[in-house]
Length: 50
Image (cartoon, rainbow, N blue to C red):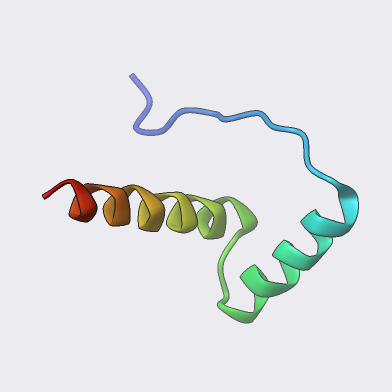
């Protein structure tokens, strides 16, 4: 079984372009950058529950 799963989503082209620039500044792929953002929000929500 693969370690990761694919998440397909639609995004405005200009938003994707801006996100890619931010990911590039951190030397990350867009996929990794988005994954880190999601993880950050999940962690933040978990802390609020505690």
